[in-house]
Length: 369
Image 1: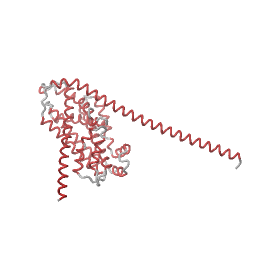
Image 2: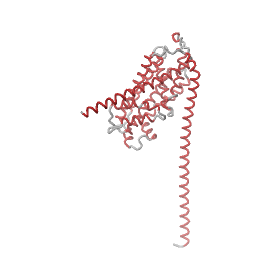
Image 3: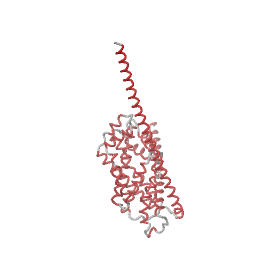
Image 4: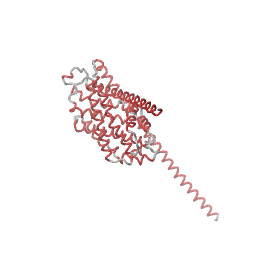
């Protein structure tokens, strides 16, 4: 090789190395920009969540401040029978959804035990009051996992059951408000949009893709295979079972209204309003992940939806004893409904733990014999 050829080859190598360096530099810059944009997006989302939560807290403080004086003046005599009935109806409402979770695990190719599934479902309800709502998944998947049930697959089943429940609730509540309560024009328009979007995530192909995006069971290849077994008939059954839950939740809210001593009129003519109010309030409260158990969010939405209704029924001569404004009464009912639901969840947890410990003791005694 001549001196000229060596020099030419050296220049070519230098140019090639320079091009590669520029390429890697551009690639690194692009990756850095993408990473920075993702971090900025996450930061904006986090800020947005805290802004929403702050606004809700401020609204609650203002609402309570304006209503608290009226509540203190009112000689409230609770009807314990109806409040107890409300708690029982609330707990009964969870049974069909607990069955849906049990069935989902079976659809995903696992072999859960029915009692263990129901026990884990009810016992995990208190976990939703932990920020982020992840504690429900941890408790439930941890309690059901065994040689016959994969924790990752059980987690996927939790997502399916929860999205089906909340999607169905938003769908039912939105349709009821849109078709039966069009006097709320603003809510009707929002309801129409929510109804269109709420059912989409639980369509089998969409749900499978959603789990990939959320990276559920990313370390377990069996999850994708298990979820692929979902069919549209499972969607129909899931919507049917979760609809029963919202019916019971509506009845529970009606019982709370009776429990505060208010004559709310006929049950069947007003039941759609109760179902719509509690389903939308609960579903939209679930969206704000930073709010434990939808705390605050649910009360705000429930109060806003019930206020126009209470304005009408307070005009009834039988309710003349109520010296409360509709806003104060709606706030009172929403707060009482929250207290009733928490007390019911704590009590069922204690009962289940008591029977579970006794059952283990009996089984242990028999094995020793």
